[in-house]
Image (cartoon, rainbow over all chains, first blue to last red):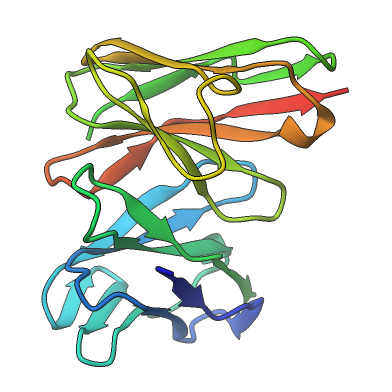
Length: 113
Length: 114
């Protein structure tokens, strides 16, 4: 069974700290990985995509991918209260030719001022 | 990324009735998907809306309950049929972007069934 697992949360960090969100996936054939941010009452927003091993940085966000360990993470530097949201990890289903993603259950992040 | 709209944004419906949700995109897209997000839960894929052919449903979802149409590359509808309180959820459409797996979501439809 294809699975994507995330820290159950909630994760609470002080303002200005680094927030670390983790995700593991079960299928070694997956090649595309995404992080979505979802504010309460809103729809998910794509914030990062990563396809190759290593780090990918975009502003205060860094996605890290380790395919050998089947692990993808999202680091948020200098966390702000506006980063408080649920973060969803999504992984390509490699056996589905129609572009299907498998979503984790999400990690709720709370950044305290 | 494409601009995606959904109608209605929310609705309260009675048990046994049906609701059709519309998803409109401002540009042609290859793939469109319909998801359900129950309170406090993650996203569950209902089906892939295929242009010009029948939708592809995920396990646990059937066409009689969730008929889907996709008449062109910018529009799709999802109908929730014979509703029960268990169908109370947020229904989201998504479309693919520049890559096959990169998905962007519409604002969602919040459905309450009484």
